[in-house]
Amino acid sequence: MQGNTHLSIYSRQNLGRSIFFRFLLFSIIWSTLTGSEAKSWIIGFPAIVCAVFLSIKLSPSSHVSLSFVGICSFIPFFIRQSALSGIDVMRRALSRQLAVNPGLVSYTTFLPEGSARIFFVNTISLLPGTLSADLQEDRVTVHTIDRNLSIWANMQNLELRIAILWRVTPHRGKTL
Image 1 (cartoon, rainbow, N blue to C red):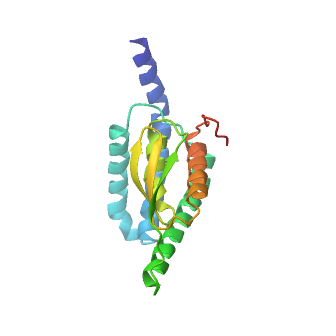
Image 2: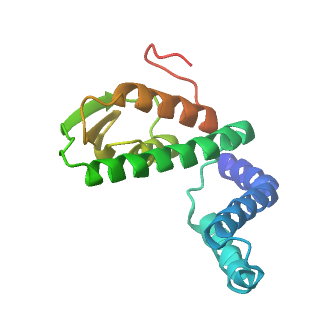
Image 3: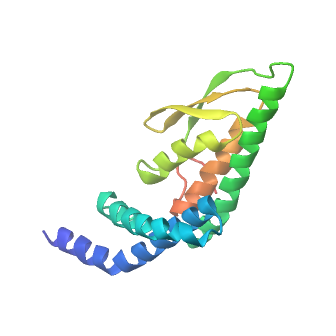
């Protein structure tokens, strides 16, 4: 019973911080999607308030401590990789020759079970030519459009960035 009391006290202490960062994150996303149109905030502000409320209510009760430095370095990485993926797909679609060499790649992650691992699996698809196909324990199966791409290096880079973002230390012989 005392563990639950500690959790509820701990959660209350961090609630304001969590609301602030979620509001900031959702505001940045809204601003990015709508541009500088001031009238969009008529809908955006209530939508952000609802998103913050729902994300607090629906999030797991476990504490997730994201690194501010990790967030600041991950956002530009995410934008860059998304753009590179789009350019790669466009280049392949417009090419006269079908430049594909598809296959499945199996990758073992050091990220612990939970939010960091799920975020990793969902984010793999932003890497050029990749799509998460399956997750079994710590093994991720990734479909790649071209096995000649540097899939391993890209996934290791992504995994390390997510480890920094989630403040995760590696295990099983992998090092940061």
